Length: 263
Image (cartoon, rainbow, N blue to C red; front, side, top):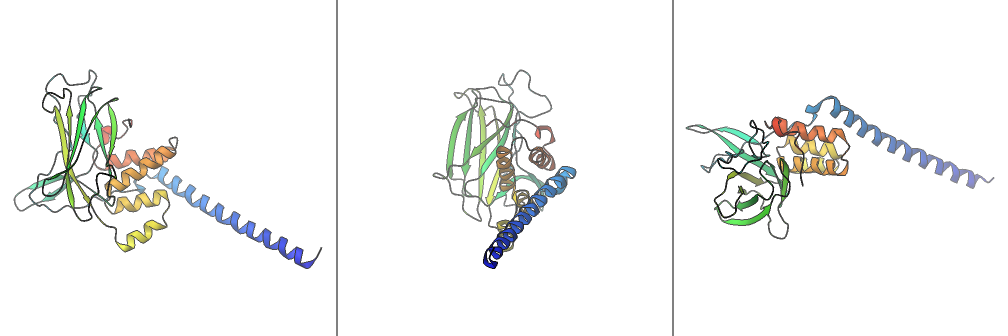
């Protein structure tokens, strides 16, 4: 066998060994991250941003509930039938304390999440307004499943949230479309821009690490939507379910943290 052939074989063996080492290192890092998450659910900790009080309505995270017959037969009494899955951020003003229903995102068209426990075929209306209270988006749909968590994604061809601006949203539930709404929730979403430092970190981050970066910087929509994508990709992964549950618990929504997602 020639020296050239021996050299080639040696080089191939070396490259293979290096590739295997890199793969094992990546696998070990991901495994360690998953084990750490499993042992300590507080690994991903959400840090809510502090909105400035501009005199606007603070919003309402939980609906008051219907006073009529628009209820589920077995509806849980200690859980509101309509809940926006978003942080409730307390701030102090010159005259009083307020709790803003507030979330930030880097997305131009984020996904909103709600817990709904109203009868099937109830009509739901979502309205989005800009800071001047001009309506920029409206959609109406009918519930085909209930007593669970639903999501509403802003369409890219109709909505484009501008960086640095806040938007007021409403969600109404009507059991009979000919009547006035039976229940509603409202809150705010603001699109923000990542700093160059955070953006640099996110570019090289692994899945759970990226979610942790979003959470630490108060990006609620990015945090929740990212963990949802992981749950969809690996529905049997208990770590992802644990992160989802813990995030809801961190913002005071323990009662619905294990409710099923009904797409």
